[in-house]
Amino acid sequence: MTRLLVNRRAALGLAAGPLLLAAPARPRAQARPDRVTFLTDWRAQAEHGGFYQAQAAGLYRAAGLEVELRTGGPQVNPAQLLVAGRVDMSMGSALESFNFVREGLPFLTVAAIFQKEAQVLLGHPGTGLTGFEALRGRTILVGAQARTTWWPFLRRRYGLRDEQVRPYTFNPQPFLADRLLVQQGYLGSEPFTLRQAGVEPVVLMLSDAGFENYNTTIQVGRATLANRREVVQRFVDATLQGWAQYLDPAGSVADAHALIRRDNPEMGEDLLDFGRRMMTEAGIVRSGDALALGIGAMTEARWQRFHAAMAEAEVAPRALDWRAAFDASLVNKGIGRG
Image (cartoon, rainbow, N blue to C red; front, side, top):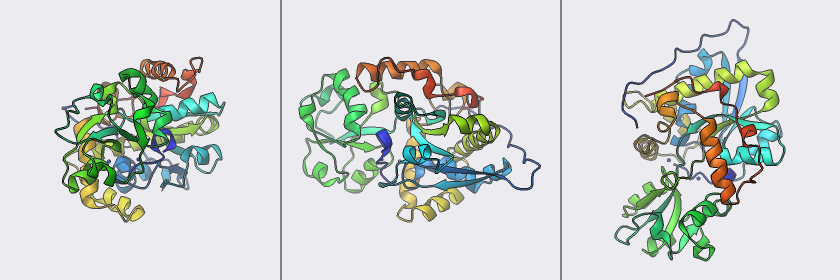
């Protein structure tokens, strides 16, 4: 499940406490709503659920917006379409924002939905895969994009070797045929597929290894943010409210799932439910800074730490102006805090 880490988002995939929602945005007194196009990073799935919930529940409409959610896919590069001006905003990651800065492109991140990276490594039970240290000497199936992003981080941190890596083609058969293989995956997708095949996989989350990539971010051009800041703010607020509703265990997501299946007819309800549950159980959206600052939270301290880790892994330049990769002024307002 690409872009840097997400050009392949496999199709689907907490803190306790009261759910705090910001008051719905009041409609603007205008002849027509402001139009916004937002491009996701893969085909519609549970990991996009908050955006679809905001659409289905009328949160965008209540905020005076007419939002078109466009879906990504294997032949779609959200960053390229954003840079080309084909969409107003797109889904991305912190690493992608570092690339914008490195390439001198005037685009940045304004909200980070996923506080934890949902990429995982999967192994067979009973093979001694007890943690990342146990990866040494094992054959690991890794996709091309991952080899230039999180793999260098793991390799350096845990003393792994490039010779261990074999291509991952997003086909589970090699893994199912060899109990000693380890493969990459996406928390709400491959574990579901493997369980359907009778394997209860060992799941190692990259976030547990200290890989602090913000993911499922909202990216926008600096000019758009400057010229339509109030519109972008309303989109961000309604989106964060959508995520708060989508992850509310007492709430209904039937209409959001219907929209997801409309955009991706191959998406089954059982897979959607699995992905939503995995995000909740793992704290993908509600963890870390989001517990106090609300869904979408970003902090300068975390951006600095992540840049330092990526520079150490030789994924990002040490001299990169990492502060230019984000603007946290639209988030950290407590929406969906819980």
